[in-house]
Image 1 (tube, helix red, strand yellow):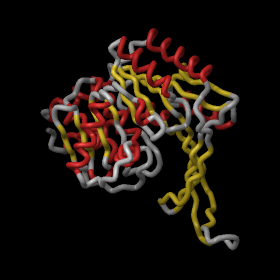
Image 2 (tube, one colour):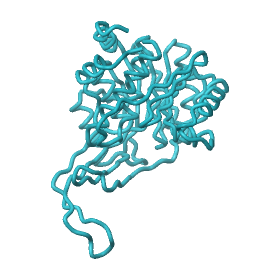
Image 3 (tube, one colour):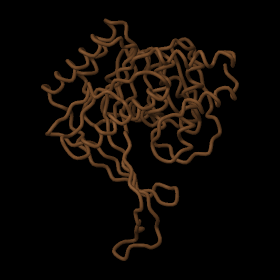
Image 4 (spheres, helix red, strand yellow):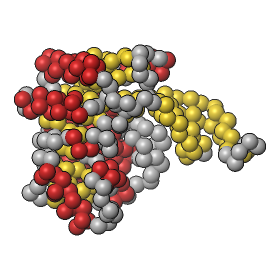
Length: 332
């Protein structure tokens, strides 16, 4: 790939409509400073001076898709609560459609509250309901997905699975079947509960811990030969098109059953790794839908994930910065 063609690569993204199915949440940040230890327990007291709410989970994947120039359509569930109203307001402010958003009285909006002092995250508090949705809601969600696919020219479907209950085996199975009947690509970013339910997806992107835990493996990231064997076996058994395993500081590993590729991470100043997986799956999905070569997809996605780690908190990729950085590296 020549450097002169990079702009054309990113221009392809603007032609794509992306359906994102997954667990959305609010990332709340409490910024403050620590100047004493609590007399009640050996923990720091944080004096908060700023609070901020951001779209997280599948909401952050949507923001990344949007930032890269494509059109995201999010299907997710929020609670009929104050945080749910904040989520809907943030969606509106970011010009994201709420056509696929369900408001459920029986569920609460998932919130991850991070407490930050001195440029470091010192604690996190999660508020959530993670039980699987019932069959009635499953049917409603699938009907909405089917409606969106019928009305919009969807190029790719992304499952953003944070184990919060929206994505069920039934939804996975039926959406993949529907997508295949329409020649729509499917991508999954899995967690443990549904790890072995994503048969026949075109791209499967676990991180190393998820891959090892999902298969109950006793290997280390550095044991590349063992990783290759396990990944080929898993890919074949589950009829997966492309297996893309992120290895955090070591880079990424991919196999399509014909060739295997490993790409080391670019050296960067890491401030916060939260949200990096959202950026990687968004970038990889668009590269796949745009028909880019696998090595190039890996390099661009790897770089995008590293760039967002330079910023504190969960943030979407900066497209112009990504373009500049891609032009600096040696492309395969």
